[in-house]
Image (cartoon, rainbow, N blue to C red):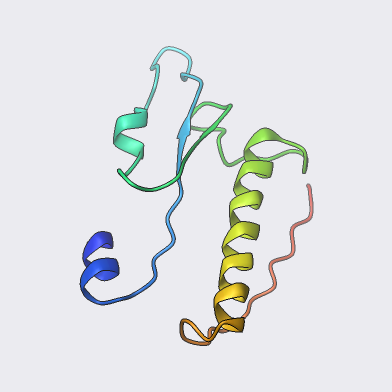
Length: 100
């Protein structure tokens, strides 16, 4: 479906695949790297188990810096494309993050 939108409908779809590095106690790895990734798309690991991979305690957490870095990269590409007249204008959203 993602490739169809990109290849046949000229829709820009950004995807970055993340997978867990650590197993859960007793259960082990919930989702393998092979199952969590798509060919031809960027892949990044997060040094956490499946349950903890999106629970960030600090802004310097490995998973947070990788995820935030990808979002910044996407924003930079969209801004570059907009300046060059490529792509459709998009609404902008500001996401505020406060550590708990």
